[in-house]
Image 1 (tube, rainbow, N blue to C red):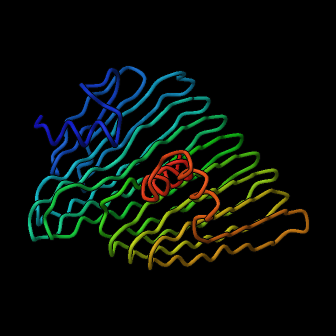
Image 2 (image 1 turned 120 degrees about the vertical axis):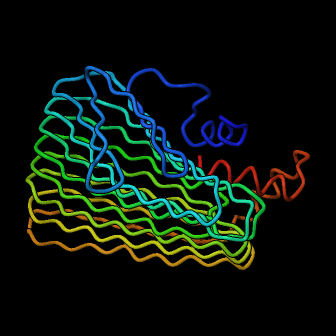
Amino acid sequence: MTNIDKELLSQIADLHSTPEGAYSFRKNGESQINSTAEIEIVQKTDKKGIDIYVKPNVKGKSLHIPVIVTKGGLTDVVYNDFHIGDGAEVTIVAGCGLHNTTQEDSAHNGIHSFHLGKNSVVNYIEKHLALGEGSGGKILNPVTQITMKTNSTFTMETTQLGGVTSSDRVTKAKLAKNAKLVIKEKILTTNTQTANTKFYVDLVGEDSSVEVVSRSVAKDKSYQNFYSKVKGKNRCFGHVSCDGILVDNARIDSTPQIVCENVEATLVHEAAIGKIAGEQLTKLMTMGLTEQEAEDLIIKGFLK
């Protein structure tokens, strides 16, 4: 691996060497995979991507599937399907890193579909980062589709670390009885970058629940758009919270939507967008920080 590869992998997947266990490492459209007795990875034959099979009742295992793109003019599209067996518990570390020094756009479109068996638990960690001084676009368009059976749990932590010229992020989920979905999103945009996020969640089963927490910071002349639609079709609970900080001449649009189709559905949404409080800056500056250092510290804490 090159030094650029290592830097990207370190930041998007916390990897400093080849991971133990199952993994799929994809670079510029080419993949290296490793299966284990508990987690099988199979290359698709009809299109680019892989099928991942986590066997029933597997516990305490992890899967790494990082992607990096280091060529300008390359649009990498991949379809990954995750089949989680009944009673399995697994941590999946994904993420995509782009490095573009050219005038041509580079992009990665990852379409991930999760099929969770009964009583299964998935912790899914996805980080996005773009580097390189080229004027070409650094584009990421992740799509996540989640189907959850009875008593399953899916926790998704998704972070856009910076440098991404534009992103369109779409997450769709359908929950059965007692299924629980937790989504924690963090996004940073600067310069003239744009980030669009859309969540669609159908709470179909009795006592299913979803919690979506989005925190974002938009700086310079960047733009972010957040949209969520949660449908309660049974006795269920849904909570969507979107908090944003504006700096300079940036803009954030937020549209959380809730649809109740059952008298016993409880759905709540919150949205708050504003600037950094002046008293916070003043307090930190009295401790010896410059205004820029104080602002950076507040933003770092907000996105932590």
